[in-house]
Image (cartoon, rainbow, N blue to C red; front, side, top):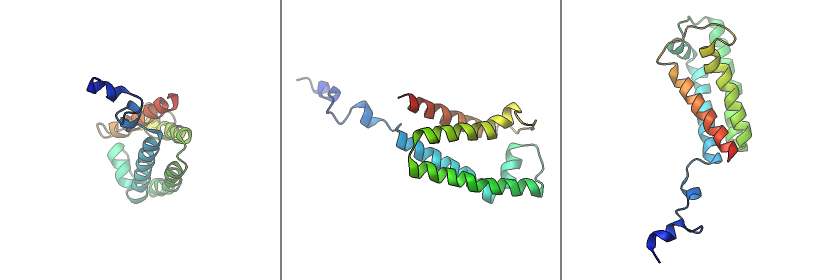
Amino acid sequence: SFPLASARTPHSPYTQSTMSFLTPENYNNAVAFVMAAYALQFLFMPAKIITDHFKATTPAIALFVARGSAAPMLSMAYAMYKMQDLQYTVVSTIIVAFLYPFNAKYNIFQKLKLIYPMHYVPEVLMTTLTTTGIYLLTQ
């Protein structure tokens, strides 16, 4: 038989499903990593996060709240990693995207002065994670 025809058989190690790195497990792990990194930044460098993304000062209460938000974010990242529940990860990502970068961009709860191009990073990251998760849910 023609040698390339065997690459298209269902038992071939080269089928699309085995070659794809876009799996629910990889997605859950990637999002858990991003959320943990986000949380650690809030915990250890809240002033930098604020001044890199916003034309704003960093009063003590803002730093306190930013550091405190690290706990639920770390818990969420841990749950994403341990549960490996695609729906939980996608819904959590949508909520974080809405409350953080899109809230800031679209002035949903208050008007903030953003610093671009730096604020494109969370906007693009959360858009990519959200749309990828929704895509995986539809598969």
